Length: 90
Image 1 (spheres, rainbow, N blue to C red):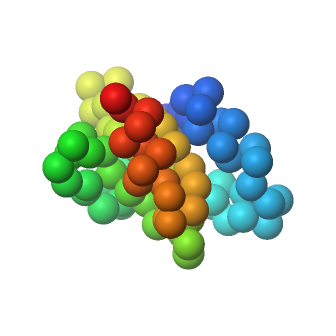
Image 2 (cartoon, helix red, strand yellow):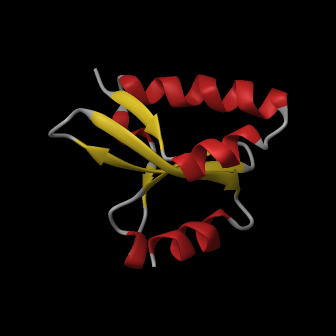
């Protein structure tokens, strides 16, 4: 079983969401404990990341198989989350 950790940035983004969206995201993030490769593999400069889809929201994360940890880097609306994560990794 894997552990799921949020970076401070992802935690801040999560805290800004509507309570209903938070509840739904928590539920889907729990699925990563047993199925870490559930999210879609990203490409190009985001090749090391995966994107977990929840309606119009995305959680962008990396898998650390060695430590059995999933690190969530960003959570947000699909409209701008990929631009945000690209800026964060630069």
